[in-house]
Image (cartoon, rainbow, N blue to C red; front, side, top):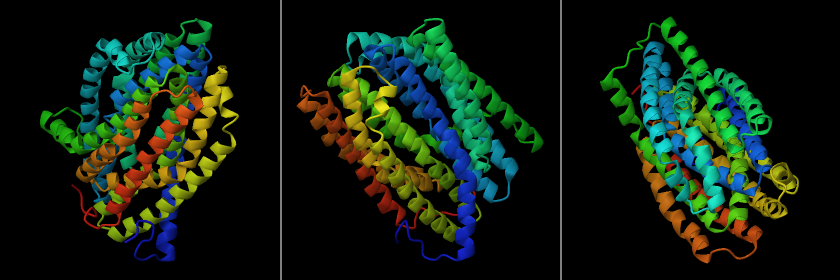
Length: 452
């Protein structure tokens, strides 16, 4: 059965699903692109300080996003569980499950922050960048560690709200929080002349404010539904066990991104700086397309909780088509602007040229990315974590020969060529991932109904 062609479709059912997708995806889209937009702004602010600073930001960002990103199950897994309880008609249980995730986020955030702060220099050094870039990366990473607990809390509460079919509140928090981030960074970096440290402190303050605001919203909802708030070790451990498959899946994905950055660092500061911005642009486009995946998680979880397998197939078909066409449109826009975008991030002519070449490859791969992100969201919403874990591990193993070949070839002396080869290899990873997810989506054994 094709993932993009459900078994049957009545006009009323299809229209209903389209309205629901738009209702959830539009605020999710705006919230998701808010973060990468401000990350792009951060890259532009730091990029104008110098190439070493931009390269250091590339290393620190890869490490920091990995440290927090491996716990994305706090959002994804929570969305699925909460949505299933909601579909089964038990909103109190839905919110209580979300509170368990919040306590888990606080514990994991405290431990992760301590590890990253203490090991900031070894982590930065492991990427093999130049001494100047390592120094900048260490500074940024050590300060940013203080924001990790807030980052994980934001993930957990956002997952709860999405499961409750509320994507508007995370949008408001994102716009206000990341707007404050830009203002703080400009003041700290240029007004107080704190350099890359100023950007890190601005981000920590903004993230903490967002976390406090979102927790307040969740507590109000819990009070209104008389949901339990006190931590219970057994329930928190149960929430952790539920997230293990998604943790494995995310670790494999982050390993892919880390090894790609590691190879970029081996090519020199110019390719690494260009790769940092190209990856930030790719992340921006990924977040934009991921709005459909967020809608998929919420819709699929609720539909399966209510026992509506056919509704899942209808919604999936619509979202896959929208994902592919949306990715194609975004990619063509980026290709058209590949000669303009680099000037926004750096004054270094070599970095500009390499970045422009990389952005062409990034743009041409977006249709595949749209397909991947939607199917990933569908399977997460269905609670198909164990299969997703194994699928991502297989994908990583299949990707390694491509990226390690780039590492073995080494710098060619032409940074533009090196970055293009790097991104062609990364595009191969996305194609492999599309094949793996597409095979799974065509089966029926992940369509398990009921609250669980």
